[in-house]
Length: 128
Length: 370
Image 1 (cartoon, rainbow over the protein chains, first blue to last red):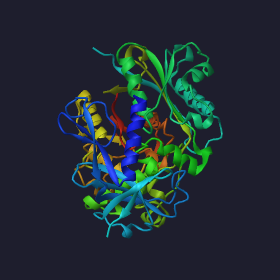
Image 2 (cartoon, chains in turn blue, orange):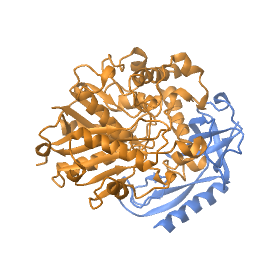
Image 3 (spheres, each protein chain N blue to C red):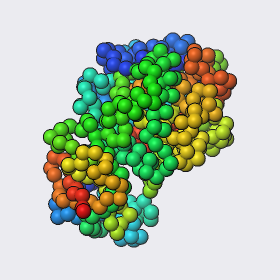
């Protein structure tokens, strides 16, 4: 089961590299879930397919941290961003380099996935 | 049919930066609880231990080691982890086993030692409590997770960063009266607003400290106690914690009580925004008015519903494996006249609330003085 989970995470990373967000979709009821699950929280069925969505969305909330976790010290200043993925009920998070103050990224700004950094995770870019 | 469960005794170390080993810290709290209960270790039938980062002090397999150190090596012990909610989740399991009649008397103890690892390492360790692949792995620290909740709350509701500061000021006022509190320092709203940003919009004084410490209680059946002073009963929206709402609903139902029946509460204020959301989720205030309640003083010791008379995680400290049990110790001290100047007048019913990480787990307990 763990191997399957890791494989799904690898597929999520592969999709992110293409600028996509990979989501689990329940084949029975259509529920969409970001995380790897083994039973649907809505209908309890266990039949899923992986679906890719464009990695474009709207900023729901974010923060700029003075003390970053280990591995992120080399980034000058970045925002950790929660964004809602367009055309889905899914919320995902990623890091957005170059954001120095909250005014640089108003709530409601549009962002897109630009890839997956081995060290820093899902990378984002602010759209004009 | 379940047994009534009593808190027979309670003990706690000071919370803060402690030099002893994690086992020594735990033993100091255990000894306090055993002495307070007036029993000997031989009367303890099991040890329930909560801890998260024992590995940081090179000690896992905590419960059996502790049982041996208490001179009862063959008494069963188990260790329970549920991030910052470990203490309360463990307390629930301990309570259930006494209520079910499986044990007559047991030790419930939480302990943590993390400050020696330093700020960067502690920040990293705490980020492992998130859903790491989707959150911590993208660069979110724990303050960062709550900062994102704070930004969402301040965007959604009529509340300001200054409102959050009132939570910190109130809890520091209470912590000043608690000799075991980690940070005993009076602060003002201006101090909070002018303190350095940790994760925008949260500033240093919006955040609880990393703490070492241990708290312990002796739980037993009413029959065992006889001398007992206290008995136990019983996210589509980013600005609420669904596990708190669910746990509170269950606790109120078990106790046959409503939020307005509670005389005071110890709630999980790892950050000022957390207390604001807690008091709403627990039913003390309407959604979106928790920050206003802090500003107007409704949660002060002399307010409508005193919140965190101990000083809370914010001032008393947050040794994460011990925090939930520390809240129970506060209730015990309040009910037995041991809370000194921070006593909540005429309190007879109290609530504790503790959650893990950003609320993936939560536990609510309601206590009645007997």
